[in-house]
Image (tube, rainbow, N blue to C red; front, side, top):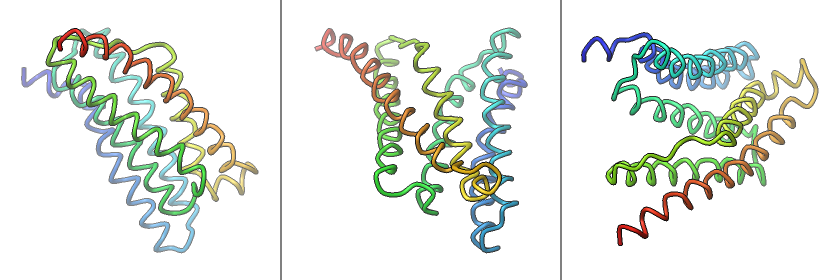
Length: 195
């Protein structure tokens, strides 16, 4: 069992969790250096590497038959830590503000709702499969966050980088509401049956 904990898929998941403080550090450095583009681009590349590892940890675990309980537990936690921390960072530094904050709030609230629902359903031995539209939502969300992380540094290279990120964030928020409702509806059947 110890060998499963240190399998390559799980090491990729641990690495994704370690990316969170590294990205936070980039924003701290950016603030200290008065808008250092290098720090912003470093955060983007760390996030891109983390996002790629998200695909490979699940893929490799399946093809190498290395799925484990720790991997199943930590994989969604790593994703949520990454998304939540970055949304808080780009909100704190003003990359997203005003109405666009609502898109971030919708995404965060859905993540909490679905996590709670999955935890409850796990006690009932019920699993809710990930739908294709939920995978699309994740993809759009990751691309949006990459654009928002680039933010002002990205605007110098590709005009409207931040605005593209905000539009994609709203698309992700709409997909998030739909998939959140989908999960809730599927879970509600089991909750009602238990009463």
